[in-house]
Image 1 (cartoon, rainbow, N blue to C red):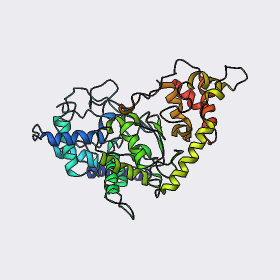
Image 2: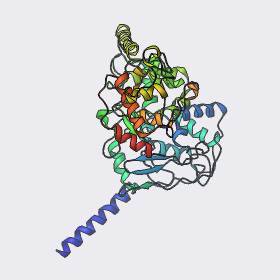
Image 3: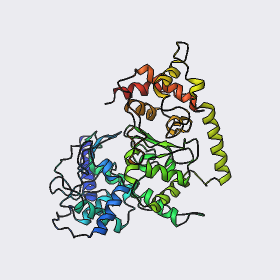
Image 4: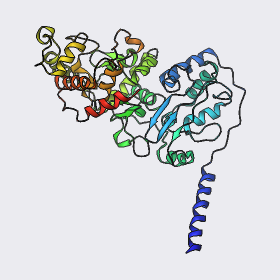
Length: 431
């Protein structure tokens, strides 16, 4: 028995050593020489960095652009984004183009360490050579070097062993773009390249499996990301009015649309980053994203859907002449709170969209509504006049529960949220 046990232990260690040897990646030698790129390439790289919202993740609150340190919460622990400025010691200043391309496409750093897929290299593996080089040029020559050191990740065992990501890559790394089908033209293909590549839209809007990879059977079905719920973009989209290309371009570039409301939470900075993109690219992205919900509606069907939704707006929207009675103890506490705190801005015809068209109120989870109430909404650059104040220190936990219940019941036809009290308590404790 002792010999057998010793053999099993030896075989285990030998197998582990063999796995580490087989999956180990070599270091790419430091490089201090960077090709001088012209202004056209740097401008292209700057636009690509915005298209991928690189600064959103790679800049901590109050930090310098691309200096890293932003925390990303995952089921496996906390990951901190890297400093990707050209600083020699703490950034990527010693990275060659080959090292940068390997990180983007294979999730392996210059030193040979595996990167966690919170850095969405499973999407970036689909980016073409020219775009990768332009992005590299911009980060190396168009961004100021910053000395910020990236905090150590706080990952639980065994996920703190990076070598295991070799298995993750073998299972889930797929550099192939979706193929176009009948009725899907060059615009759709360009949109697929943006969304499934540098745009990495599915990284936020898709549920993940137990290993943290996108659930391919439920892509774009909505998911929680860093404390916010990214709505479904497939046929289960909660939007009361189906998205059109024009509406989605408004939302992507300006941060709001009259039929869909304001980009908040994690989407706000994305809309700001997309504001100066080429309109052709944004229409292409919109064409692809809209197709995720299925075949487009005919103009008549779209008009009918809008007509039905607007009829509900007229029926439920806040009308001062009808609803703005003096506060009374007999009035539902949620309605009373809405009347005293919310109706001034969310009155009939309120902007950016009537509450009956608000996607957050129609989501399967109340987190976005609760967080917006507590924290307010900092509008994207294209919608600076459409903000919402924070009520964290102004109303009680019971008030938030009551007004959220009221809004869900008044402005939607959805079932009441069963976890509302739990979510409100959790978000009040969040700082």
